[in-house]
Amino acid sequence: MMEIYIKSSNAAKDYFYQGEHFLEAAWRCFGQKNDTGFAIVKEDKFQQLSVPCVVNAAFSCEMFFKSLLHQMKIQYGRKNGHNLHSLYKLLPSKVQNIIAKFCGNQKDNAVFENWIENHAEDFVDIRYLIERDGWTAISPMSMLTIAENLSTITAYLLDKVNLEEML
Image (cartoon, rainbow, N blue to C red; front, side):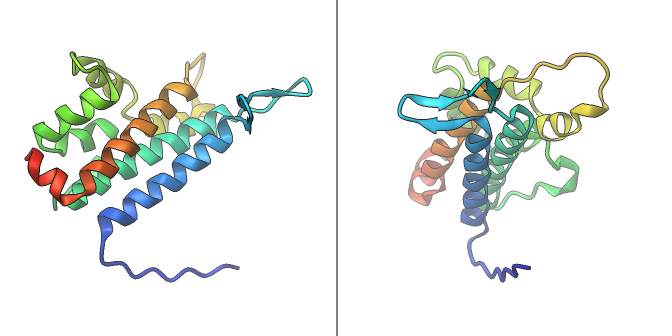
């Protein structure tokens, strides 16, 4: 058994690094890295673990939002839980705009707004995919792309100087 002792003075950074670890796990589930990108099929076997990939990427997004909320000392409570849209909406509108432009479309925040509304509960919904009847569409690359972009903009915003300039 491995024991871990955690004592932190910077919750925002801790949430961010936790998000980074889950994002790395998502990439590992996406496929096997090689010289040209990722091998999803190897020796006639499907290598991609789509559900764990999406679940890990969605959880990393949650951690990135929570790191920003901690940085700005905004309480989010349990009712917002894993809902990406709820956590996003708790952020100040200027920060929401920055995220929407960086993760969606420079000219139209609605692109990201629609995406996050449609994927708000992916961490829970996709994790319990087996409890659903019928088909469900998931896109590992879509969730990974948003998670990567959110990681980049969160790292930038966690710098207090950058954040204070924008607010």
